[in-house]
Length: 180
Image (cartoon, rainbow, N blue to C red; front, side, top):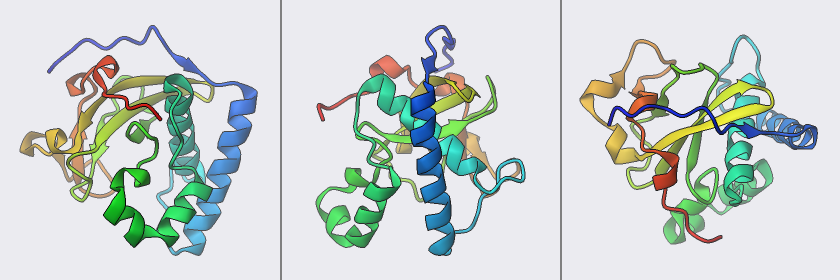
């Protein structure tokens, strides 16, 4: 694909947005620890990955006016009814109603991480955090498009995964967005 990236249209979050994001990150962090989910520390900070994830998801929700299905109260409800939800509507488990969001704070070099178990048919959206208030929707791809041998990475990431370069993602204006 090898496209040139456009950083001219950032997504800006307000102080009010950041309050929602901090609340979400705290709920995720405490809920995940209570559920025994392993802490993926970012820069030696337990809540760091939850802050980045929540903020990147919220940036997509705000910019594309879609539903935030990955918020902790919604996710808790889905986990409790997981068998029913997955059987009837697996997309309900995505972070947003338009795709699964993956964030990076590595400006201009962070890639889209796709795990082996990630669903092939889901769109995965890469969001880059420039600072606490500024985000960039870099691009997207389907899970199956990311699972190429050339993008397999078992050295740089905490767990082996596919790492799609930013410039190899599809432009955001090609993401199929369903009415919510």
